[in-house]
Image 1 (cartoon, rainbow, N blue to C red):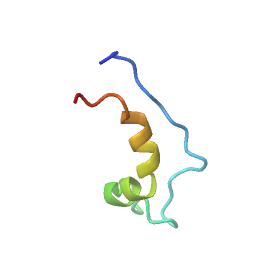
Image 2: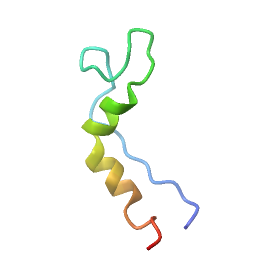
Image 3: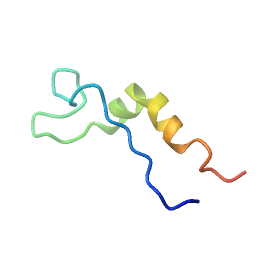
Length: 50
């Protein structure tokens, strides 16, 4: 592992209207993981040991 961090900037803020956070601004992890799975997978590609 390189020790560096891979970062992505989302095209918009997470919000209540899209169901990604609660009214008290808590992250709804399953929703975000499902919506941004492709980005998460890209970030971790190559970091998993075979």
